[in-house]
Image (tube, rainbow, N blue to C red; front, side, top):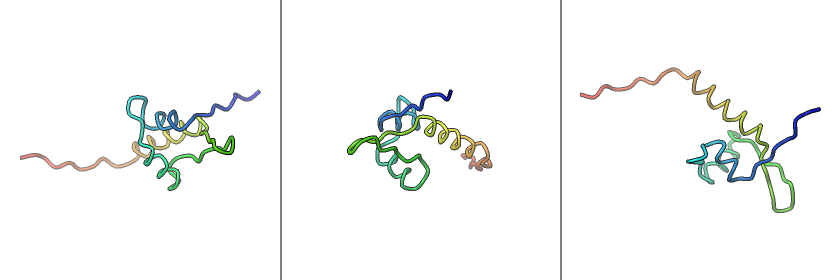
Length: 79
């Protein structure tokens, strides 16, 4: 038997991606969806959408993998 699919509203989805204390902004969230960086919503009614929690967590893990694979940036020394 598979695990139940958990759905999140927009506020919870932004908190998952940005953190509970500083969720990403609404405009950044929808911009990320339009660009394909964040998961698309699931329409559950004529005026309601939700996001799959596992997809949001997977997106967050993918961002961490990209960060960890990127070469370190060179920093300038202060004089």
